[in-house]
Image (cartoon, rainbow, N blue to C red; front, side, top):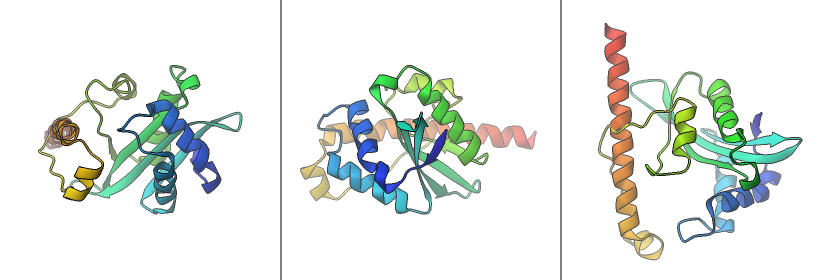
Length: 181
């Protein structure tokens, strides 16, 4: 079952993240992850959650509530990670179902990932649908781009985000059309 991440959980959560996503140029350093998790814990609009088995953390979810004109709010999932030795054992599915049941309060939940992401099958298995609904614009200071991000990778991620958001927008429109019928 999911429970709130505590400050003392940050080190193991960073380890799970690094182990799950690998140590590549696109994965943050451990100190950056530690700061990230601390910021999410402190943010009142965010969820920093751990999934435990026998009192051991085996997975993490972070998400943030976002205001919306179309509904009370949306929830954006930023991180879903399961310890590699626990992957393919149903933990990811259980975590997401638990999140929907206990935290979403019937709000739209979305995340952005690459179309060929290993998590895509997991997300679809718990009822998420790929959507492509609007253009996605992002301002990133040049100093950030030149120091950290390969612009080609960023452009590919923005294009994928645009497709995902456009699908979400169409889905919302379809839901509204059905409500009006």
